[in-house]
Length: 334
Ligand code: UDP
Picture (cartoon, rainbow, N blue to C red):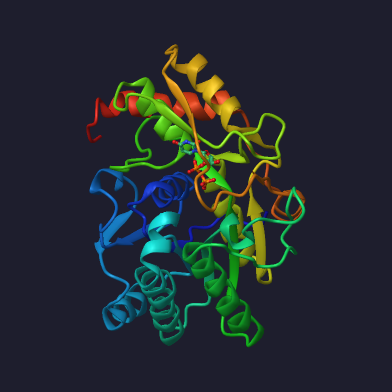
């Protein structure tokens, strides 16, 4: 590590689940954070760290003026639509926002001469990987417009980087879960689809039962296996990625996970222990598009960025999410 200095960072989508945790970690590390967000899918309650500018990425001219005036050293780009089944039903909506608006952002950055970029990518770019744990060299094989939109942006970044127009780190998130252990911010979706949130809301009594989607997968207990990463460790990975770029590192892609998997049944069992509620579970049919096993190979991020997770513990991930859920109240907002 070189000398500690303050970096000015713009975070798009900084009011969202992951962006808001990253904003907190960056501010706590002494950096200057400016959040831009159109609040289309997030709530202003998560806007606790950094300065806030309501800005829509579709407005490229305003974006350029803003970037030219503020001159951030790094842009971190979280703003995107993220619901996989919705992307299947409304592909244009996803390509327009996730690809089109990213192009506008990159173009505004280019005009403002800002060259460091951290991109929120996803394990969805791999689709159903042939080899697990999957490493960063595995081919793009997305099976949804959401995953395709992330792969498209990665390809654009690769070409821009080759041409010397940008340096970037693309972080491919596996299953992000958990909440700020201090309880200030957390996931605040109206209709969550993610397993841990669904399980905890069932424990709270918001849903009558939890469905397990598919018990006939080729996995040890027949349910899907995922690599769950605590959102605070993911946020720390962003800080490492930024330091890496600022120190002159070349463009890179990293998996973000812990390198181990838990089945749906295992997650449910831990959720019951953490909450102390024996909520009802129903085994139903497979959800379309779910890969049986998704586990990250994590050697690269550990070696090249020195990533050392602090919260690699499923009980802790679920406990922090549960504390946040209880703070939200029943069906309520923070
Ligand atoms: N899942 C489930 N019941 C639910 C929500 C999810 O059985 O109510 C399963 C889902 O089919 C997948 C795993 O839990 O196998 C993780 O799903 P999630 O939506 O949390 O994340 P994804 O891996 O799809 O990004």
